[in-house]
Image 1 (tube, rainbow, N blue to C red):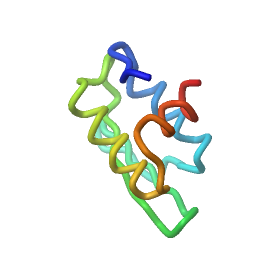
Image 2 (image 1 turned 90 degrees about the vertical axis):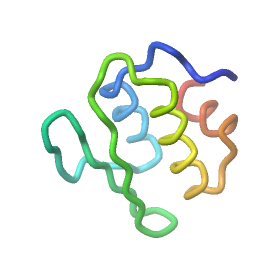
Image 3 (image 1 turned 45 degrees about the vertical axis):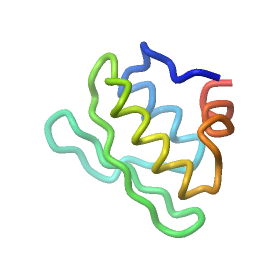
Image 4 (image 1 turned 180 degrees about the vertical axis):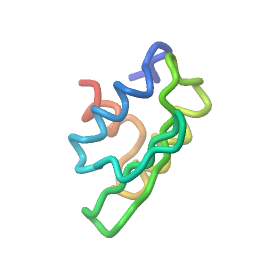
Length: 80
């Protein structure tokens, strides 16, 4: 599955909730999410529409490595 080019920050935040991420704080347009499954993990998501492909790829890599998932498996869980 390819990385979507039209995913917004708000949509990504909602979908990361499926993996147990919760909003812990927001500064301007940037939202910090925290997951406590598999240890504590923080990720910052800008509420931009759409997210830049490099930004989205970096967020997905960070979340995937924390949960032990490949980017493909993570995309399948979030978008599939």
